[in-house]
Image (cartoon, rainbow, N blue to C red; front, side, top):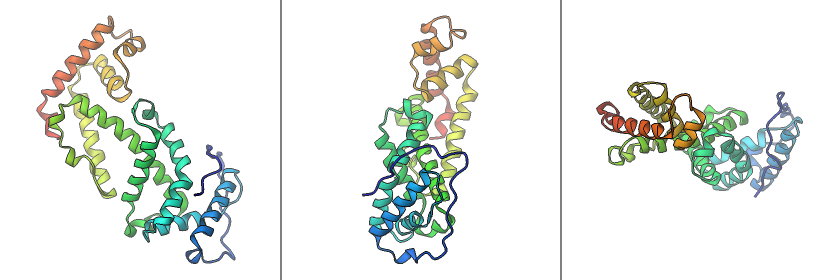
Length: 247
């Protein structure tokens, strides 16, 4: 399978797409030839030279609009290094406890499920598809960190896991609102800056009490106060009927 020759951050001035004049109809191209052409154009892109995005776009069209497994496999192998690059650059990755391979697979799965055949026309260019794939890569990492926070902040039996994984892109807005409401309610139950620091550092950044105290010694007398603050927060949140009502 093909792979990108290199993964780098695009320059401030992105390369310009070549005009498609005198190009053959790619919808009739052999899959192997199309994959090779897409690789050539990708190398031009990463060298910041004029490139043709149509071969890669046609691969996405076949994979998403036509359900071509071969095209999807080429896309996965072709863009896997880039997606892993995006995953590792997401701030929450360092404290996620998961491997980059796990998130790469999750990002592609989310992307594939979010763009059924009937929705493909909503993405008129390769850039729009890759921008959405990048969003998927970022979201799976952040959602994983938030999910771990939710399981720590609420008793396991109070979370209905059957409702946590939504199948369609149209449901993502509902999922996002639910997460925002979750954190808004938590913030309203906290009593001051010290508690907000403990929640943010513990459950979003994965910091240990000793690390929290070292970073915020102005807010706590000693590390024992960090432990006590965390225990008090968890007890208060677990008694909250409003928070339980979300699940």
